[in-house]
Image (cartoon, rainbow, N blue to C red; front, side, top):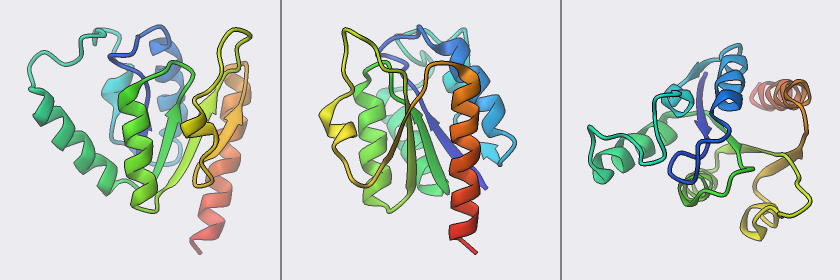
Length: 143
């Protein structure tokens, strides 16, 4: 199985350690095509050795190849929103993980979409249980 993980890069790198833990957990279910999202050396300016077009084309190709998309959507990111929309248009199963915060709300464009599964969590162990359930349901729906 090919998994596309989406998380903020240019929208902020505060959750990079969390992304690494999520990606490691996702590895139980298949190949994560976007492991670079958890690279602690990748700064908010993005990848320096590639043009924006090259990044767009590569990432869109990975998204098309993927079976499912898991996105951590706590940090607002235009790119992650774009990736979620692209996945929905291609009828991919999408799981969005979100940590609710008192002073912020999840974008209505994500939260209001019927074609994505939104799951709130606070701690990493909660996220792993959500991910596990998502993959059990996905695997049973593809049999």
